[in-house]
Image 1 (spheres, helix red, strand yellow):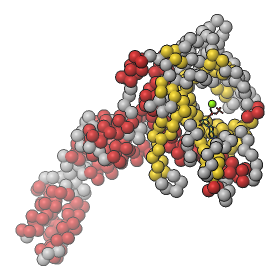
Image 2 (image 1 turned 135 degrees about the vertical axis):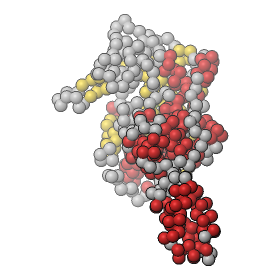
Image 3 (image 1 turned 120 degrees about the vertical axis):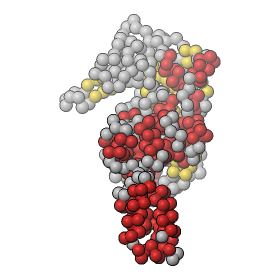
Image 4 (image 1 turned 180 degrees about the horizontal axis):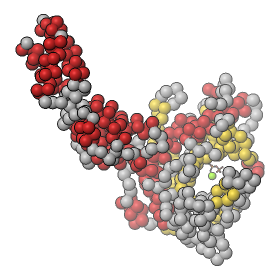
Length: 495
Ligand code: ADP
Ligand code: MG
């Protein structure tokens, strides 16, 4: 990948990063209009007169959007603003049908708060820290310019115009690309657990602008910041920060000044390029929207939202440790995403062997999902009850764990309408625990290896494994190894 070569004096500098993260809220309708908030509709079908600010129309705040923002505030320990107002941010752009965006310039719904992050530094240290939030405000999204619909013209789709967003603005307290990536990963996880945003960066429901500056280590004053836009994955946010840090260090080392500007990240070249300078930046002429009255968030309203809060990832983690006796490591893996946690909870309603359930989730199921990135748990062919049925077969010694993980799992994936028991029967994978058959195999093995039997009886007890292995071969894996061990030992003592 194409990353600029770091300047030799890079280690004398520190990076300073602040993020602005936009999350599209999972409401049924728009922030101030009744049009549907839906991704993927035919262009310009969710566009009514309020979204276009036709004369005589009046916007009306979406109650649900407030509730979702308050959920975020409760999860991050923010102060919740009681008296909320909206301002017009005026600018001209083709995707902005009204000529202004409604946003909270003066009374962001949330102030303060923090999000805990754990990440590995480039030199391998594991750091647990918290990223401080400056504020979070509610606003409406703009429409979309579509450049690839027509070879000669730009098309406009206003379906997205007016979709509710929260913009989360951090303090400039992030110090590495790894920390920024961990913060975004944590936000994505959190919004999904909270059911406030689907967290999909490719579809743009979670977007991030990055502000980067550099300063000599030990300095306390902030350097001039550059804002970077257009990253569509967490990986690219990390790459953009690294590239921009390298560029700024090289610029300063060259004796030049950093220009305050907006730059764009190009994922193909791995570099940032200038978009516009501060001097040419818009003056947004913010002023309170005269059509909207203020929204009062009462104590009772906050209490009602609190009562409906979904379980937070940390609470699920602690419950998994307490309720299912999982190790911290397993509980951490199983709370990696809401879907995994939900699947596991459901699995544990069908089995009490929680350790086996955890092993299945972090083993076979996870491997399958890793190998098939287009499949996620909700589309996964096997339901929790089916995994539980496999666990029941191994717990009752009807099949061995190795047959279960190496054969039965993929057989069931191929024929998910069959029961695990039926498939094990059809394929002859049920362990043969019938003593007569076992005894016959054992006798055959002993007759075939008289010398080894003598050696065993003279004290070379390690040969037991060889005999058992031979029986397993004869049974084509159907013999229960534990039972074979017991019977074999008995026969050898007697012979
Ligand atoms: P603006 O007025 O340009 O919008 P703000 O002060 O509102 O700037 O900050 C916007 C974002 O930029 C915040 O996330 C903040 O943490 C970050 N930021 C501000 N100054 C710096 C800086 N010198 N270096 C890096 N990030 C910064
Ligand atoms: Mg700002």
